Amino acid sequence: MENVNNVTVAGHLVKSAELRYTTTGKPVASFVVATNKRISEEKQIVAYIPVNAWNQAEELGALVKGDAVLVTGELRTGSYEKNGRTVYTWHVQASNVMVAPFVNNKGNENGNYDAFTDEIPY
View 1 (cartoon, rainbow, N blue to C red):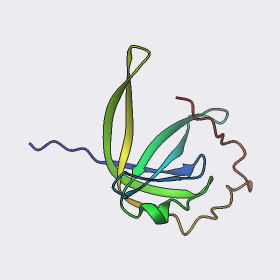
View 2 (view 1 turned 180 degrees about the vertical axis):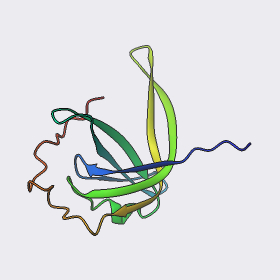
View 3 (view 1 turned 135 degrees about the horizontal axis):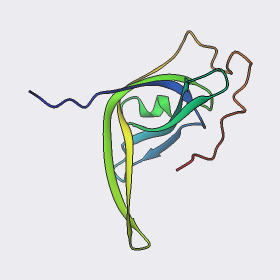
View 4 (view 1 turned 45 degrees about the horizontal axis):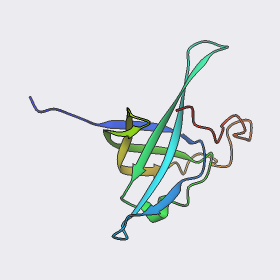
């Protein structure tokens, strides 16, 4: 059996995408997608999922807080040293990102995304 690493994420950006360039000039767009799962009338679980997109990076760099996206790709891990300790990281390496054309990207059914924060909890 061949191993499989496929991820699909649908949600909204918690802050505007960041467009960066490698030292060789290749663009990469980075953003965080929030997904919500309602588990009761009063409670929901929110996951904050970091995404790096190399394909369409310059176009995706124009995404703004609240935009609805559908991301497919692979889960990637990494690590770095900080203060003598190893910090482990993960993100979705996007192979395709679709901006939801059927959603009003300027807000949810109540008209805003003020519940999202620029402070990502990790």
